[in-house]
Image (tube, rainbow, N blue to C red):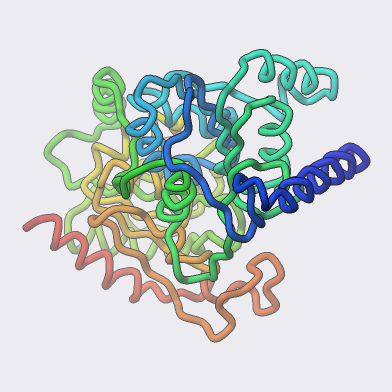
Length: 382
């Protein structure tokens, strides 16, 4: 695979050199000073690549909306993965979702090559590598699309025909704004920062039925707690969650709904065991069921995670606990959301190489989270 990437790198750099020397034609300039026409001509099929996380895709939806506004007659397809693809159901800006299953259907090299050939047969006119990584650049190039937009970062960046040049510093720019800035290279208008995640009526009805089966009525003050996260450094300890949940029951007579993903049952079990009060535990079967359940809560408390972004997209009152992640770039995009974090002298950092045991997350005091949670509850009740 490395040899293949090296070949594409060399090919792209040669093409890049040819472009940079054609200054006399008035058509090309040096790539650190790109000159693009805003609206691309003859765009009938667009592919957007976002095969990473739930939050990554949700924070790309405002940029997808801006693309739809600028290319209203184009078919827009999104290349996603099984984990995040369901969030696009009901999105009016997306015509089709193409799922790439790296660990399943497309695990073998022969299956991946077949997938790449099928993409090329689609004859997309524009591919947007909204996910900044080598693989999306490769897919964009292999698609044969005449226009390929992405960030001038990572390997194969020289295969892009339109690229955003620059570097974001930590603590400066939200991911929504980064994605909007990227597509503004080929779009007019500023765009809207509102995330798009639409639940279907039957999904909401099913959530209400599920809550009823758990003994949760419509007249309770329901607080959903999701203690999971994509990595250990993002997870606030179970004992702290248990203490917070007990306070919420005591002060607000709240009903606590502990939600967890497929591999997170131990987290909610430990919280339930450590609590003095009662709590109800449930594992949603799908991301969309999780979203529907969150929509029926009066308050959501969670870590920096995909469920946090779901709650933000639903504009739910939310308290999000942050550790080493860039909280400016990844905070929940909702005016009803608040974050809690412990400021550390070592931030910004390389979270996965922490030498002090992720004290920003693991030693975040319950009192800090409680104060923010209490303010959020009171604000939501006004």
